[in-house]
Amino acid sequence: MAATTVTESGGVRIITEVIPATDPRAAQLALGSGEAAPARTSLPVQGFRRAHPKVLGTIHIFTGIIHISFGIILTASEHGNPSLPVASGILFWLGVLLLVSGSLLVESEKRDNLVLVRTCCVLNAGVALGALVATAVHGTAITRLPPGCERRLPLHIPPEWCLSHHSKILSNGLDSTFVLLSLLEFCVAVAALAFGYEAARQHSYTHMAL
Image (cartoon, rainbow, N blue to C red):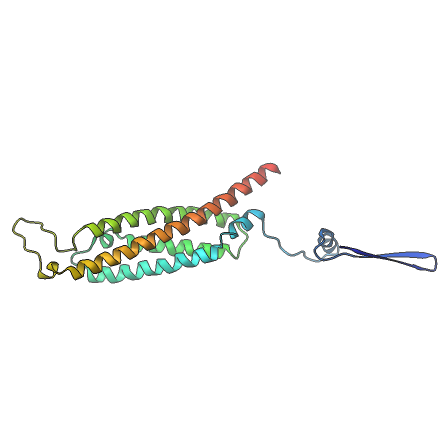
């Protein structure tokens, strides 16, 4: 609230008004005196930041590193008989997509750029689709025999280690973990996509109103 004082001296009345920094008139006075007003974030970007894109991006980056790391390990260990997830390459291309999408989400926390928000929406739509594909791939791998244990010929005898259930339990546990990670990635991507779409829609509405 502005405070006003009146002082009379030599027949001259001096009126002094103190304006708080939160008053809109203070910004106008600062511009008039040549001082730079503090930068304000646009409303659409503010709405997108309510989703905490830095946190969502960190989750994407972390899961992307896990995908690529296990992709390298499994590709090296299953060089002769790759499993379905390794043969499809889902661990690598989804991991790279998660790293790129996560990096842009973290960057959108720092910059007031609606183009960056829209780019995040496009990439997160790809992440959501990729997460669904990964869930289907890992789910299918759970129902199949371990690599090298399939009976390709009538007289084909599988290796002795195929008779042990430990390898299948380990493989199913790993695929189940990636199914849970894929569902997490899908939820994070949908959240970022929903807030990004709302920000783009709000920008279009404001542009039409102007």
